Amino acid sequence: MKGKVRKYPMFSLCGLACGCCTLYLGGHCPGCGAPGKSMCRLLKCAEEQGNLEYCCQCQNYPCEKMACTEDTVSFVTCRHRLKDLDELKRVGADVFEAQMEKKRTILKELLEHYNDGRRKSFYCLAVTLLPLADMQVCMSQLAKAPLTSVQEKAKLAVDLFQQAAKKHGILLKRNINKPARG
Image (cartoon, rainbow, N blue to C red):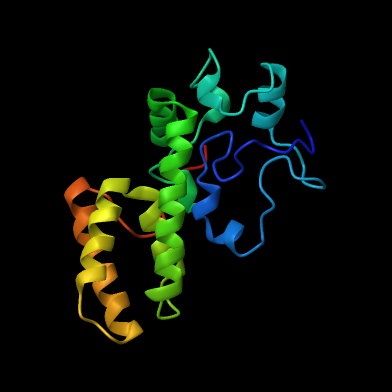
């Protein structure tokens, strides 16, 4: 699997939303299985299970190899990986990938027109964690707002996403809790 080009590299085998990650967007991460990148244990496992594209396609999903305490992890795209993999399993890869592309389009719009230079991480987090329907409602409200400065647009965007997140009990902040070492 090393060097294998994934069919859809914007969402990883283990459920990371790569296409919404600041590291990936900044060119600091080549993604899963990229040439020169060490193979993670899940890539090796997927190869052994028949070259699966996603862990949720495995008969053993979820397994101990995927162990991750999502409420303590600080890496943004990890926070909903099991939830996203469950959704992928429920709706199918084609539908899920189309939803991810819609989220990526929203993220691109936010970064191009609503970023005051301090919001990239926040927008990546919001797009990763919020349901697509909520993102679309927020974007519709942003488009209707008669704001002119990028600072005004950024403030309204943050307020709208925080309201949507609150409705779902989602915290739009990096998790700084560290797992206990035992």
